[in-house]
Image (tube, rainbow, N blue to C red; front, side):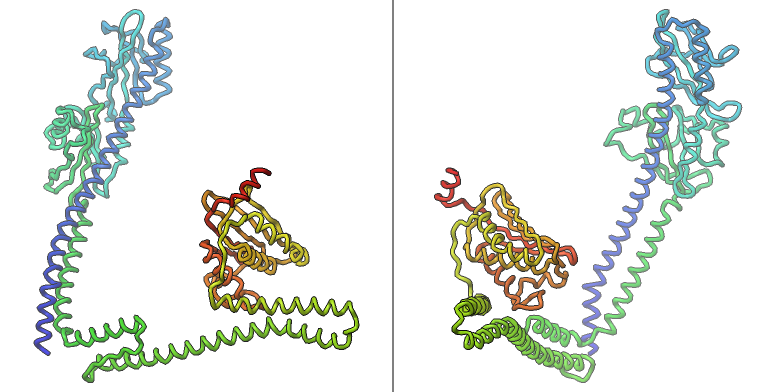
Length: 590
């Protein structure tokens, strides 16, 4: 016993513990790499979206300024009219503190201020918009100036606007990563112009310069190389320390149109908190699993492996239908009791299976006998009654004719029941030749129109526009149509309707019989085509079973769809074939 336990523990140690340890190491490493990458990607996405919003924010103001410049371009307005235009825009657009139009020599053409302008003409003459550095006014709010060239008849001029960036601060304040992560914006040259942390805003007023920040340097280098937006540019990610010595996860994104840099900083302890928790939990689970595996392997490494294998083989044999299978397990422990229980179960299953077979045979014979009695008693009784009357009324020619019709009708019913039983036991001999579907369906529905009228059910036939043909047996197909239509009429209440539809779909022909009757319960649909399965109060339940056999022998498919209270639809599909030459010639001549 001890030897088996020892070997089992060694087997567990080599087959389970070692791979589990390797899996644990790989899992910890993958968790670290994946979580770090996920956190970094998330922060980079925040920085990129912030940079895009800032660029759109500035571009919007530049667009507005372009619109104002367009109002002043190539016009013959008086100077006072240009002043009115500039002042109206300043009044309408609070973001513009001042708008001044300078001549090419630096003289003032028009300004929105009441006195002398507070803005200076641009120092350089460049075609693109010239965005100056960001400054803080006396209210400690950021502003910048944007200069645009204006083509005039009297020479080139410059429209200079002082733009308030107060909304930029609000935009940056709204950017948060976790609880302690904030965004900051660095202008060209390293000037800190916005910071989302309220405690760090004094750094803006102090004019702090971050030109030596690792990410600012990296963005400037990429911009110099022309790869700031390149797909191959390395991610702008750094792990730095703040002035207090705390580790920070910092990511950056460039604002290309402004040569600005957006930096998102988050304490590493917060950024990787989930990673640390998951890593601790994973290591704890791995260690606990190792200890439990060794412990269970030691205490449960007994000689039960062989009995278990024997039980497994016996179970597989039982599952395969070999109910005579038995297992032999020695000893007096629970495994032995389990083996005895298994053998008792197998013997009981064998007995139950035999009982089920016997009951199924009895039930089948009972159903057949009851159905035969039900279907044959009425015709036989009618024949018997007619025979007793014919003895008394033999000299009545009219009754003799009635007697003959009654006997022929009832014997026909008896013959049909016996024919169904015979067809169930052996394949139905069928002929195969092209059958005109429209014609065969029309003949059946016309013959059953009187029955539908008597039942108060509308019978409608919708034929295909062309004359499709299928390969089949006309008599057998008519029998299938008749079975389906008869079932539909019997299942439909007076006032309802039965529709027979013929559809030609490329190489397939579909024949549908739809009724608005009571429908078939869902649990009966699966067995509706089985032998002796019926939803009606009378009959052997062979009509649909024989219909499916006929359709299968003709290479077709038959399906059913039903909804209780809404009706039932039977559909048959066959391959389309060419018409017989003489039929095709007749159709062409007509």
